[in-house]
Image (cartoon, rainbow, N blue to C red; front, side, top):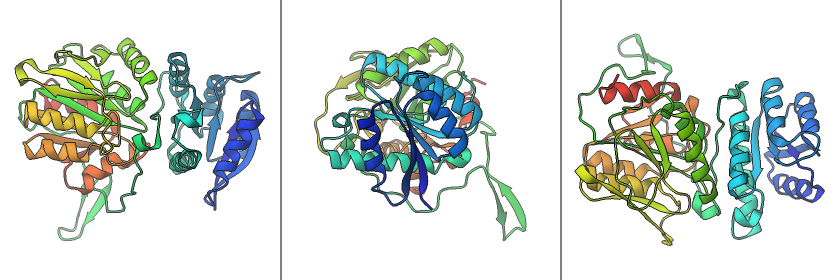
Length: 386
């Protein structure tokens, strides 16, 4: 049975265009449209769609307020359409804070170089969110939703869905040989005793909520520098870093060329660029570069940043792969692991999209899969700070 989609926008042209694109997928069907936020709330309650595409600027009730009411009254997976401006970023982050799961640029020429690719990406993202409906719960206004986008289809990568069996998660499995049940850990039981010089985090779709849940629980005197690669366009990374900095005890900033990595500071890779670590581990610096290589699908790329971390810090890295579409981070994590680094991944149940974590899991790179709620305490325990 096709997933049901409600399209919300005050522009009749945009409603028709989005509807036409989505209806080309036999697994999706646009069941209705709404012309303002209040109508969206009413139809979300009465029609119970699997996914809602939502504009921000609308009459009567704007998209942000509509998301708040929908998540309180009829929790639904919501994809926001956003303008790629600083103000658009702030408004979109507010919508994500209200409970929306993801966003895409409203101007399709900012999604991809041609309409066919843009349509394919939109259908893919809506389908991904539709499959998450069963796990959507009412959210508090203090929670941030999940998002990730880039300015082209290439930067998302054409994900080949991984079908291999994922690693053991927080579920109970029968141990047939021992006649007992085994339960995968939901939190790190004890520190490995390793010494670390860097915490590295890579994520995509669903990353903002995951990053916030981890970073807001770290103390001001966290002993390691942190690098973060979140697939996001340039207009959003600065606003997102500022938002995190206002919520966290540690310092969070959009990375700048020449930044010296300091303990208790988290550096977010700028959208559209690559973040590379260089120098010696005792005085490591960040280099921010443009990258026009056709071999690199993502800008910023987890693989690129993790690979540079392996060269500078060798095995003294705790690396984490969180929710996201595709497999970016797998090869960078592989490089780190070959040097002796520790690799963790987010479990399937708490991911918005179980793509990137699954990629490192099925490759045998991840040593531990945790629910997002357990990461902060487990990190603190592993680095012997909790």
